[in-house]
Length: 58
View 1 (cartoon, rainbow, N blue to C red):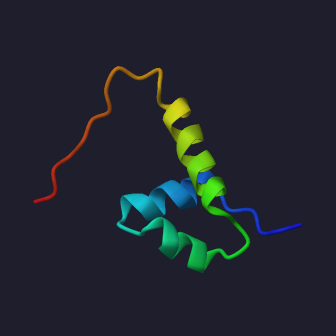
View 2 (tube, rainbow, N blue to C red):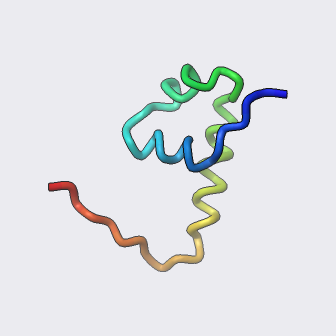
């Protein structure tokens, strides 16, 4: 069985500027489709929200 990478780690990495290729290098046991699945899961998890408060970086 391969390494399990939490959705939070994948989404957080992308939010911090990592590319999918960066994530695949960091976690070689996951696939590009695994990353897409994590993003789909995260999108579905927040789909019931009307908005998400975003803060602009200073």
